[in-house]
Image 1 (spheres, rainbow, N blue to C red):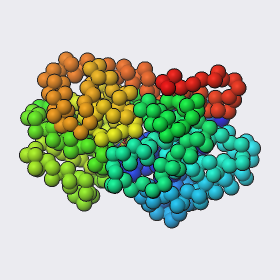
Image 2 (cartoon, rainbow, N blue to C red):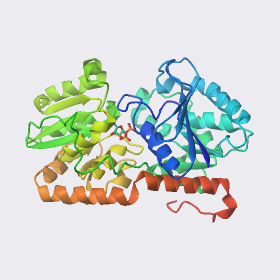
Image 3 (cartoon, helix red, strand yellow):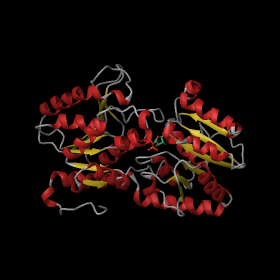
Image 4 (cartoon, rainbow, N blue to C red):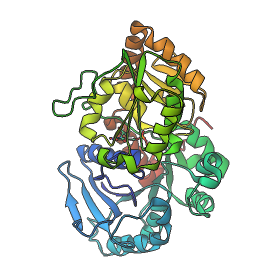
Amino acid sequence: MQIAMVSEHASPLAALGNVDAGGQNLHVAELSVALCQKGHAVTVYTRRDDPSLPARIRTPAGYDVVHVPAGPWEPIPRDELLDHMPEFGDWLHRRWSRSAPDSAPDIVHGHFWMSGLACLRGAAGLGIPVTETFHALGVVKRRHQGSADTSPANRLDLERTLSQRVDRILATCSDELFELARMGAPHDRMSVVPCGVDLQRFTADAVSADAPAPQRRMPHRIIAVGRLVPRKGFDIAIAALRHLPTAELVIAGGPRPEELDQDEEGSRLLRIARRQGVADRVHVTGQIPREHMPALLCSADVVACTPWYEPFGIVPLEAMASGVPVIAAAVGGLTDTVVDGVTGTLVPPQDPNALAEAARELLADEALRHSCGAAGRRRVASRYSWNRIAADTQRIYHRVLAPSEEPNEKVAAL
Ligand code: UDP
């Protein structure tokens, strides 16, 4: 099958951890690799944001990345990209109309709502079905961020329209299904296909010879990972540290370490740490290259994920694959992935005391940490390998391409 992935802002080739580069970039990259391994031809279309990028690159994993000229060839914040989506979609349309029949895509898969719009425009009139993974929903962002939400004003309306026009929606978690249903998305065109984790890369004995994890300065280590944005809730973990005198907190993510002191959120977190009297036990590392993340996670006794909201959250899967218990806020995808009392603990969101209590219990009990870590590894191995996610995705593609061969399934959860 010829598969076109469209990921307007999130290139699978980008370094992760920056404000606009995280789980989506990784998802598109890993899913593309896993689909290639199943014998499909995958091309990822992403916006050209640098003049030095080649028009097309064949990655070592076998998928192609095409840099689409849409808007200036420079970085543009994600929330300012909407105006360039018509150009993006028209470019795709010209490309796919001109393609020889054997190189036009059989199916298009949009990632994030703006890509979905470009996909509909690109595939219009060509008989190519469009599938969509939203990765995040505007309605959730608006609910939590209120006036701080910089998304285009018409995002909610456009997402609603998109959800009704695509041939199939791949929601990444059950919480998203319910959100989509409330938006009026058609029940019989939605499925849950979560994100995955690389089980070979993230293991309980990962080490990194050239970049060992930072030296431990306290008996216990808690790690939090993600883009340095307020909604990731790193301040919750900092506040919890006051009640955990044996623990240090490593916060990994953000810009490159040398640019960290100009980072607004990084500086805010350090100010909070000073105010809480825990600055000597908080280490903000800046961006951790992908290849060094497994060893870092292995150095943790506990991984804390305390976002205000989380469309999916790949970090908990990486921690579980590394055999580390996860304490997670009970929001979004985290309620699907983390099993309370089995692979870690679910706590109410934005509650440092609850986080501290859960961490105290785990840090005091090594056997409990081991059993939660082992259960986490078993859970991701059975449900969240990229091979399995690709198989689920492939099944959806087949269903869209040949609906009459599939039973008319409704989403069971609804
Ligand atoms: N990540 C990384 N280096 C960093 C920060 C994050 O490689 O410095 C990776 C992290 O390991 C995970 C992804 O970025 O694979 C973040 O995905 P997640 O779904 O947790 O959050 P998102 O960024 O999508 O909100």
